Amino acid sequence: MSVIERSIQVSWPLRVFFTDDVFTPGNPVLKNALADTAPRKVLVVLDQALAQAQPDLARTVENYFSTHAASLQLVAPPMLIAGGERAKNSAVAVAEIHAQIDSHHIDRHSYLIAVGGGALLDVAGFAAATAHRGVRHVRIPTTTLAQADSGVGVKNGINAFGKKNFIGTFAPPFVVINDFNLLATLTPKDKRAGYVEAVKVACIRDAQFFSEIENNAQKLADWEPAAMKRLIHRCAELHLDHIAGGGDPFETGSARPLDFGHWAAHKLEQLSHFQIQHGAAVAIGIALDVIYSRTIGLLAAPSATRILNLLEQLGFKLFTDELLATDDQGQLQILNGLEEFREHLGGELTITLLKDIGQGIEAHEMNRQTIMAAIHELQSR
Image 1 (cartoon, rainbow, N blue to C red):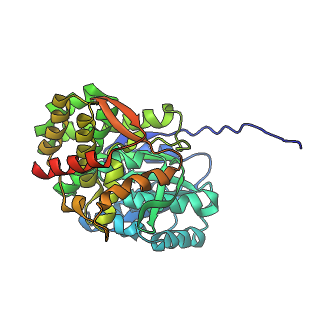
Image 2: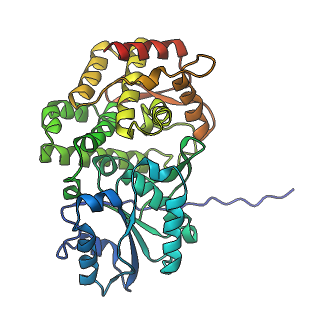
Image 3: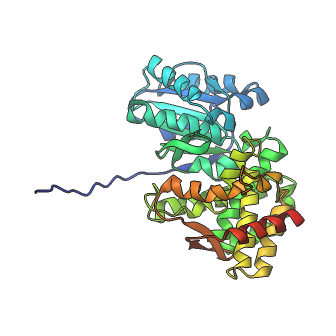
């Protein structure tokens, strides 16, 4: 037997720009990030709900590219796609985007720009990653959750077989542009959603950032712009630090530390038929794992109390009836989330728990009775 073996290394630059009014013609950020020696085709996918909330946005996008037509050619008016988790529950939107990529001859040197929340970015990113084996994808996130977390990551996907992100790819975006002014028309619930990912990454990575969120909790609850900008910027920075420096950006191992609190969150979304939004589900998932970490002696009780109190200060509810949903055998369905979480990556079950604020630790098993006790504690709050 003979074997030929080579090591393949690919370098992926991941750039996140922060600006205001990205589609104002005089703002050079988008043009400078994309334009090079030749005019490039651009297809824009726009979140339908955002377009309704900001009726002038589609026209503003068209005006921007009209101004910069010498370097960026908008091939059609912005394509409106329904966002939200329902958009990820079938491949219909992906097929629609593929059809437009084909119709307008978008190639691997063209750009697909997605403007919207995390679900739309997932759908458009998956379409971009699978057309021509990958066209250049640009994300312009328009929710706090996407600007702070999902929009600056390297994952794309849709749901299938009742499981979140069952079908998808790892494909870093060509560039991400966070425009704070695009958050203006969010509902309070959607503004709040991104806060939980900041609490999450602070819990596992940065105790100082956690204290900063605590100190700014009232300002954040009141949607104070400077506090929100700081939270989004630092949260995005910590996520990029992990992706670039964590040693496993495409999750070839069994650990997902950035998914602290997510094993239960993903199952709660599924059990509620996605009526529970991701941010709300993650808050409950974090609370569950915080109590579990305290109960088994990993996390000091005062630290656990700080985390639970902060989540509530920021406006999150830490219990939902779906935590108590049972199957035909009377078993809690939420516990199935552990195996589904493991199966998503394969290998050994690896759950991130807390040893201290700012210090996550990997665990490879969870006691079901202790989980159930934690659920009842949340119910009693």
